[in-house]
Structures are given as C-alpha cells and as structure tokens.
Amino acid sequence: MNHLKQAQLKKITGAALGALALMSATPAMAAVIDFESIGPSIYGGTETLSEHGYTMTVIDTPAAGPDGTGFAGAVGDGNDPFLCAIAACPTGNASHFYMGVNDGGLKVTRGDNAAFQVSGIDYAFLAPVGGLPSYSWGQLTLLGTRIDGGTIAVAYDFPLLDAAGNSPFVSNALTAFGNVSLSSLVISSCLFDGAGGCYSPLPGSENQAQFAFDNLDISAVGPVAPVPEPETYAMMGLGLGLVGLLSRRRAKAAANAAATTAAATINA
Image (cartoon, rainbow, N blue to C red; front, side):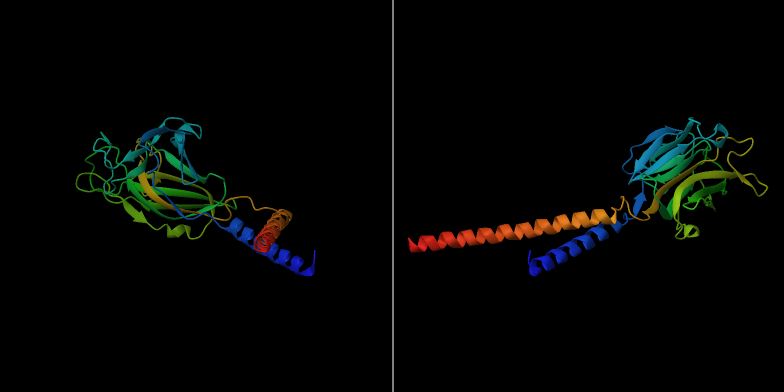
C-alpha cells in the first residue's frame, strides 16, 4: 500500500472514530411522562407501568410494607364523566393522568437503571369524597434517591379545592431538584393532621392520602447504551476504512473496464 493510500485510510478511520464517539455519547432526549400511551386501568402494589423508557412501580400503602399488593393506583381519562363515583376527580385535565389512591405511591426509574433528572410536574389532590370544604388538605411528596445514594425530599401543598370540592391541576417547575441526577423518584402524598404535621397514612384516616399527577418532565443523564471500548472503536473504524477503500477500488476497476470496452467498440 503506497503512502497516499495509507494517508487516505487514516483519514477515513479518524472520521469514522469521531462519528462513532459522537453517536455513543449522545444522551436520550427529554421526555414527558403523560400516560397517553397507557390505557385507563387500575393497579395494585408492585405492578408496573412503562412509558418513554421509564418504569413506574406502584407502591401500596406504607402500612402494608414494600410488598403490599392492594389497590393503590390507576390511570384515568379526564374526558370520562364516570371516572370518579365517590372520590372527587381533579379538574383542568382532559387527558390521561395517574391517580395514587389509598395512601399509595409510585416509584419512577429508568428502564436501563441509569440516571435521570426531573424539571416539572402537573399535580392535584384526589379528594376521597366529594363536597369537602375548600382547604388545602395535604401535600404532594417527592422523594428522590441521588446516584450517590443520598436523598432529596420535597413537598408541595395541594391547591385549594374549588366550590364543588374538586382540586384543580397546577404546575410546578420542580426547581428544588435543580440538576440533581437521580436513580429513582417516589411520588406520593400526605394529609395534614391539623397540628402542623403531614402524614401518610394519617392516623385514624387511613386510605385518604391521594393524589393525581401528569406531565412529568424527565431527562436521561449520560449515554443510553454501553460505550464500546477503545479497541472496539479501532476495529470498527478500521473496518469502515477498508470498506471505503475497497469500494473505491471497485469503482475504479469498473470505470477502467468501461473505458476498455468503449475503446474496443470504436476500434472495431
């Protein structure tokens, strides 16, 4: 192989390595968990839902322990007038949304168990019965586990109920989480005890800490696939370079053959 061809091969290999490196380092795009791909259904503790590469595990009431399997969640359609018979459905959401019921919660993780960040959520109180006075009955609670094993806990008061006893959906930018990389996020709720505390379950009022949420803005952190070792890059790059060189040789041979055929035809 002459020096010109060696230089061409090195150039092709370098370009291939650069392209492969960029492809492997590209993180997943931001997603919005909005439950539109999940049909209305009910869920017991330990059951899972999946959307946009994220797994959501339903958590039964804490009193039942981590392996509780009682009714603890549902995906509802805000357009369904029969969605809530006894409980007071939230207002202001005509799409699918998640409902945590009976003191339950929902644990969010990435499907590949890698890190993610959160930057926004829509939420409301799911009143256990209709016609309650217009108070803020409790809080949405978010417990994130950081990738270093630490935790970050944030709570937001539920909006006041409207005159009919329903809670309107509100949006929160989740600025408290900043750019913290998480391995999991548990979404749940608590009820005020009237003495400055908020509990789930509230003693004497079990199965009444309920919530609804939608449009969880979430972003993957880091590569979404294993990054090949440097030796693998070299082999792949060399392979691409050889394929390119072989293609050019074949094209040159075909052109020479065509020229020879044309010359023979003219001389005939």
